[in-house]
Image 1 (cartoon, one colour):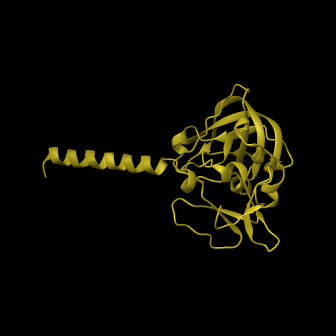
Image 2 (cartoon, helix red, strand yellow):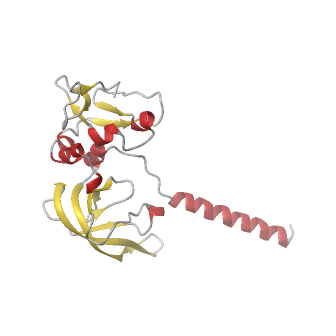
Image 3 (cartoon, helix red, strand yellow):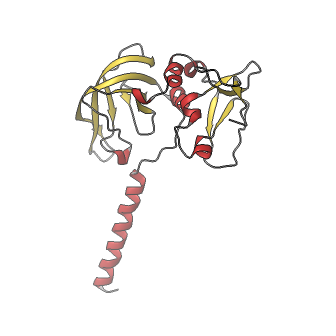
Length: 220
């Protein structure tokens, strides 16, 4: 085998290895209904971000330092979480690894869902539900205090393409993408999945009175 051909093979192998690494590191998240995001989260807060800095959070298995973005926040309200106030939120340093970029001027209010690590620090990724407060609908804001938390026995199942079906009476089928070609459709904006008297779950619109109180689970 010639040296030129060997170099070519080595170059191709290196490029493929880099490509695999990029794919492995790319952030990929399935859309999630706000109610399911609330139920999955350890912490749900309304807050402003007032400063940011890059911090080290230990080393990886190779001894390289792991960098994170630390957001200092002003907590306005906690809807779900620990008994102490959250002062800092941590995320990865880039969107390629699911890091979240937030406005740090202190002028924007956010609804932020996230997880707690073993040290009690709040971690957020692009896979969490994070939205500017002013963008949320009246139903979503009201449900944070009421239906979302009390109805976590119900599960919201995303329908990525038709046909799709629920497999349990405790599920609601989320069809915004199929019916409206958008994630934040009417089910995400105006409905909660709640348990009925017969223990089945169905979509319910609880702020403005709809034509019928419940929507059938099969016909959202």
